[in-house]
Amino acid sequence: AHGLTPKEFHAYGIRRGNHEVAMRATLDSPRLKNAMVAGTEGGVTRVHPEGTVQAIFDAAETYRQRGVPLIIIAGREYGAGSSREAAVWGMLANNIRVIVAKSFADIYRENCLQNGLLPVVLDPADADPFIARVVAANGSAPFSVDLNTQTISGPGGPDLKFDIPAADRMRLLEGLDDIGLTLKQTDDIIAFEKQMAASQPWLQEAKDHRVR
Image (cartoon, rainbow, N blue to C red; front, side, top):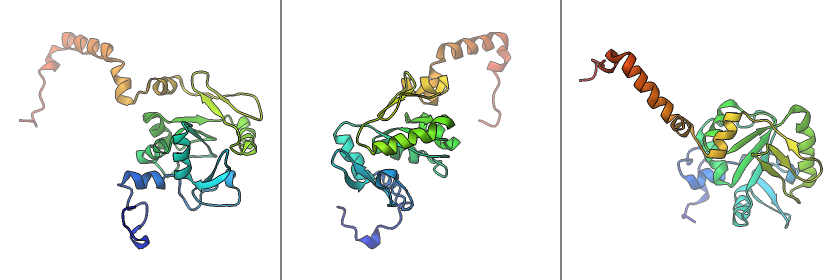
């Protein structure tokens, strides 16, 4: 589309400054294994109800046009090695709103919370049976995640409850990053500053002598 020849494509890592390239690179690892297209490797998935196999980026665009947000079901330490916020931005740009996994890399999970992407950690006893349900459904019927009730529902079994710290749940429901969380405490911060000014007035006149 931009007149580049294949030899000019170079690596995704070099061209990640372009958001359109980053969107395509997010789930395009040549070693990615997707149970919905068993026996293959790479960034492809199956689109339902047609059953056609497409690049994940193209499939995400198809579902976006249909108004269907996406969920990723994954294994352990999801996001390990992907500590940059761009790794989460790429997920959101590809219409992914929830990741359900056995565990997350700490930095990646925090970046999810900062950017409005819900990271759901499954109870170890529930993880493998739930993954088997998803694989058996093979995309033919939808799963849904309700953060208000902390419930995952879908075909092949009962609703599944999940835990999430109350502060993280509130942050996602209200769409808050760290700055937003701080601003919720504005009244308390102002009151504290007034109290400090009254009780320790000499501090208000303190100056950093390195600054002229």
